[in-house]
Image 1 (spheres, rainbow, N blue to C red):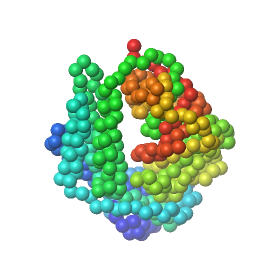
Image 2 (image 1 turned 90 degrees about the horizontal axis):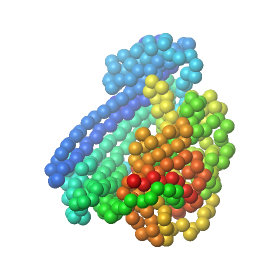
Image 3 (image 1 turned 90 degrees about the vertical axis):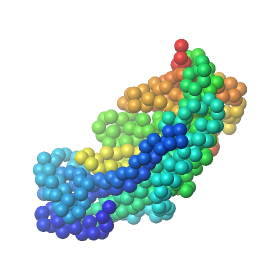
Image 4 (image 1 turned 135 degrees about the horizontal axis):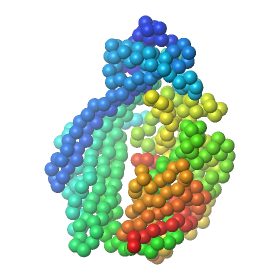
Length: 447
């Protein structure tokens, strides 16, 4: 990626020559190396360098034109600005995006470890070791069909014609291991784990393979369960998956498009149990991939979404904030259209709950570890879901793997049926969340 200050100076000079008064530019570049292995041998080794730049130009009638490019030398930048300016004649005249009023506000001071990439042979060696250890963890584990070790270096920037100028860079590494069993007369069982850190040397590979092995083995002695109503405990991963699937609850753009479970009047309403508090916490120290500004240059921050069950904020772009009389929240992505999406969920206990809820004493309780088929089993506009899951039936605290089953319900009912939020939270790539106990959901077991 070119020097951001040089690019800003070039953009200003070119825009004057083209007669452009108002523009902004957002860009990012990623350098990535990843490996996969199969029974001790490299299966796939990839290296890539990707860059993307979005240029927006406003004409004298306040219409906007948008173009994208990967060429950011002076010639490419001039072509992008010219093309966007020409496209602005065909731009919308209503609800036209504008600069964020916070595009020049100070961003948070975030300390990041910039770690140099490791050689590819090191990546292969560590992944081969992890695969070998996982295969040897139990005789029933026959393969690790899905695995990967990757390292990435990311740079991003935002600038506009009013003088906004932001840039940041970070590195991170990730590993995933997904093992599969084979036992005579039994169905194959599988489970996996993921770890993310700022670099390969900090990556908890041992913890990842241990978690994958333990989860896989725990599903070997599975049983069928009868269909019915069960008290349910969601793991951090499962609950955050549901939150993401129904994030239109907080999404101002979805609300304005009438594609949300909320309305503009929902703020201040009780939408969940008083036990639940939820924050969008992009700058949390546990978020390895934290960004200090969004696609419009708005600083990111810790935003309370639900406090003691009460809906307190929506997530906004500059455009949705202007239309709803609010403040941009740092959740915008720019392109042909500005979109709004959550960053990093942080679930916390609200009001204190009965501490008698313990897994080691639970009986006839379903513990859901991972939800599947979220792309097909969620109706985000109605609030309903019907999803296969991996998990266990708890009998007097003992975990018994569920052979095959589906959980169904209404997400709003889930929020209002929370019985207990455990005090200890788990950090996963998508956020931070404790286990969540819910009073009753429909479970359909395999016939």
